[in-house]
Amino acid sequence: MIVFRYLSREVLLTFSAVSAVLLVIIMSGRFIKYLAQAAQGVLDPGVLLMVMGYRIPGFLQLILPLGLFLGILLAYGRLYLDSEMTVLSATGMSEQRLLSYTLVPAALVALLCAWLSFVLTPQGVQNVAQILNAQDALTEFDTLVPGRFQSMRDGSRVTYTQELSSGRDELHNVFISEKREERSSAGKESAITVLVAKTGRQEIQEDGSRYLILQDGYRYDGTPGEADYRVIHYDTYGVLLPKPVVEVKVGERETMRTGELLRNHHPRMQSELQWRLSFPILVLIVTLIAVPLARVNPRQGRFLKLLPAILLYMAYLALLVAARSALDKGKMPIGLGLWPVHALFLLIGLLLVYWQPIQLRLARWRAGKEAQHA
Image (cartoon, rainbow, N blue to C red; front, top):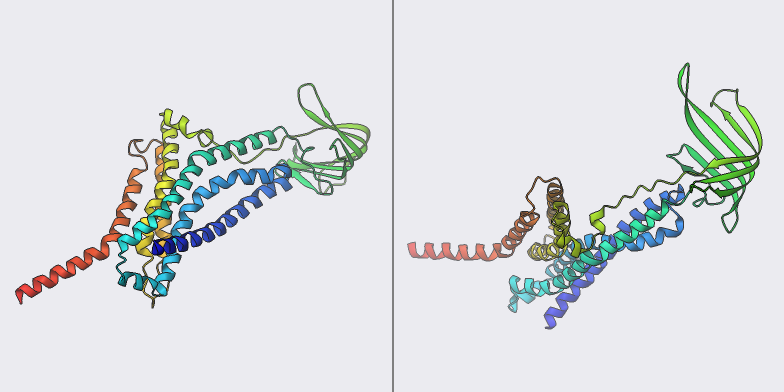
C-alpha cells in the first residue's frame, strides 16, 4: 500500500500540474477571441466570464486524458531516471503490477471525464447557447463603450460616443461613420456617410426595431478623395441600430442530455453519444499505452519517448475525430461506430505492455533450443 500511495501521488500531482497548464493555455486563447468580439461590440463584456465558466467542462473533458497521459510519462520517467523503478523492480514490482496500480487513479480520472462528458458539458453548452441567443436581442447601443471606436458590420460601420449615461439611455458627443457601395458611370464606388451629434437617445418602435435618435448635429455624404461632399445640418435624425451577429454557433445535439441521446436512434445523435463515451474509454486506453512508454534508460533521458508518445496520442484523437465525421456523413455504419479506433489502440497498448515479456520468453525458448542442439 505504501508503494501504491507513492505512485498514485506522483501520477496525480503531475497530472494536476499538466492539466492546469493546458487549461490556462486553452482558456487564454478562447478568452482572447471572445474579448475581441466584445471590443467590436458583438458581445456584451459583462457576459465574458459567464461564457468562459460554462465552457470549462468542455475544455476539461478534452484536457484530462492528455493531462493524465503526460502525467504518467513524466512521473514514471523521473522514477526510471532516478533508478527508483529499478529498486521497485528488484523487490518484485512487475510492469503488469505497475499497470494495475496506475489504473486505480486512471479510473478516478475516467469517472470524472464521464461526469463532465455526460452531464456538465451539455449543460454548459446549453447555457452558453442561451447567453449567445440573448446577445441577438442586443443592438449596437447596448454594447457601446464610452471613449472607444467600435466596429460593426465587418468594419463598414464605426461608432463612438464620448460619454454614456449610467442607464445607457443617453449619449453625448456621438460620431458614426458608415461605408457603402454606390454605382456610378465609372462602376462601383465606395461612399461614406459621417454623422456627428451633441446628444443621442434610444427609441424602440412598436415592431421591436430600435433607433438611435440624434439631436443637433451634421451629416456628411461623399466619396473619399473627392471634394463634392454634401453637408446637412439637422435638429433630429434617426439611425436604425443593427443587431450584432454572434459568430459562435452551437449544434442542437451538443446541448442534448445523454438520456435523450440514448432514446434517439438518429445516426447523428448516436454519433454524439459514442463521442461522449469515448472520453472515459480514452483515459483507460492511454493509461495502458503510457505505462510501458514511460520506461526509459537513465542514459537516454526522460524526454526521449515523449515526442513519439504525443504523436501516438494525437493519432488516436485524430482517428476518433475522423471516424465521428464519417459517422455524421453516413460513410460508416452506426453499429461499427468509433469502436474500431478504440480496439486498434487497445491492441497497441496490450502489445506495448506484453512486448517485453514476450521477447523474454522467446529468448528463453531460443536458449533452450540451442542447449538441446548442443
